Length: 294
Length: 194
Image (cartoon, rainbow over all chains, first blue to last red; front, side, top):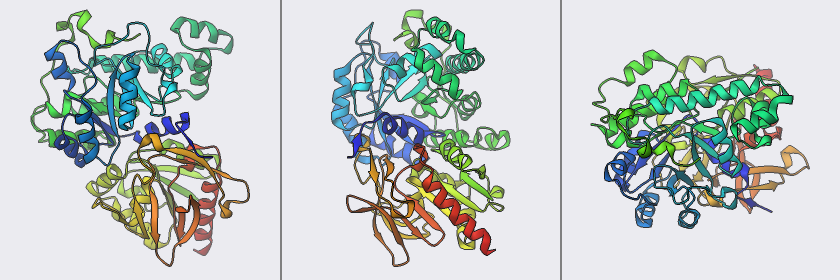
């Protein structure tokens, strides 16, 4: 009577990742560096977001052979990205045996109206969100993990900060909203009513909420943890830095000791330069990845 | 009675909630000086390589081994089971290595093979126990001082060796607190002996 793919089993894997760092990798060598540094999972990609941004054009799911080569060398979970709404890419990733699918705005959306019906899958999904309504719509579709969208590939944490502050602020407001105002609250943020009620009861999202999109230093990771994130995704921040091994280890250590400034000072020493950063206002509105999805 | 939950990474919040539901004092521990006045410790589920590396990097392993040698009960779930094991098949990862078991990691397969299933566990009473397995390990062999507490399809998924308790499944992900109560009894017995 064993049951696979229950929501508890799907959300449970994300619960096991709490307090950890998930790193973007493009080769088996990078996957080994990530695991050695203490990553809790890796995201198998063809290119990191900074390179996707630079290359332009249409960004799609990575080639299966890239993903399976990374799966072959990793003992930790391997995630991979599918385009928003591209449920066939997602089915292919599930068939490959990836442990988590990121329905990601980093890739070019395949559907401008509809996200993937994630309840339909045995494999769990993580999705980006800029506010509570967006997070609850994704959870309503079956996402078992949420992350901030931030602005991927910029090495600029400002958008991820905006998104986690928004979500946490809305949750605080919801917790203080009387029950007879909940339906209107749900309507105003365009979120499923039952999930709004559950967030009020729990005082947090019903699934874990990680930081993503612009984290480039140990201090960035600790900042996002202090703002209430459950863990950290680092995309370009590791392998676009001067010394990826040192940066990977430092971000893992900073995520553990996020509330200890003395430890963070020590962790931040001797790790070389972070990735080059991009000012958000220099990116045209229609080129901002966070605007993808709804 | 004060029970610690190792707060490096993983399902910390859930173990804290389960212990609090059982009415015991809980603290989250991640610094050396926090271990000494604990009566027991839970090592939660998470990634065993990550938790192991950070235990090693920040010198916390010796504090936990110290507790075990003193006879204080320690309960490892999933990643915690792996860390307590003497040996992990095909791996040279950091281990506390205090329990005479050999473990296979990700023994059921990848995440899509993760599952929940009702188990019959004699030490917890007659009612079946809903066990949640997430990329779970299995105990492939045990030493003579190890008592098997639960099996799934004939494989060992929970065991005890004196003051050490391990399960491949995650009691912290269900509302059933029987595994936690079993562990709290171990801590009570240890305290009475002092």
